[in-house]
Length: 200
Image 1: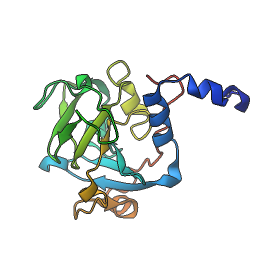
Image 2: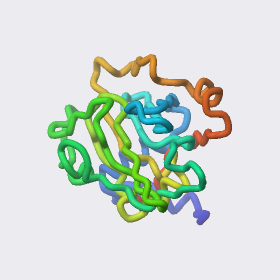
Image 3: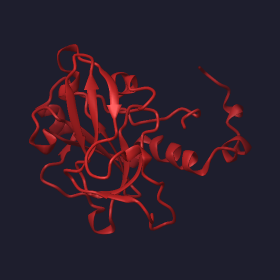
Image 4: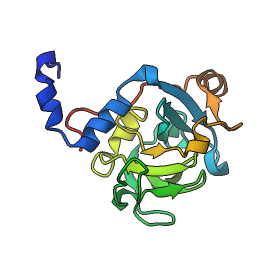
């Protein structure tokens, strides 16, 4: 719904939880991102993912439009966070402070969730990069359809904080947008995630 710009005044913004304001600031600005893609993550065919790197070293990860979960008209009907080591990633305690104390450290092959599709197929989603888990997308448990409709927007999977030594995010496996388009022609949706003001 279109709203008048005056409805988003500074006082209204201050009334939002700090974590929500930070997330919206992180996810809303296209020009502050570098777009990267990973193909066949975990050596699983078609397990394609995106990594949107913010200039402040925070990364948004999610499934690319060319992910095998979307093949042959399949749709995701459930996002299962209770997978891999550490159990339910969505229940992990929120990290605190500038050093993000208490954050769960994930490696490239760490399993963050599974996608369950309408035909019964199940696909693992791995982190793809190394860093501290700041949050899993709180929308997906109740609204898994966001992955089908806007995998690169409201359907993102998680926000990861890179360690200082990894801030340049250098890896021979990471593809630029142009490289991804050349490898997966017709499978690109590069809209940056922009959660609505009602995001939880």
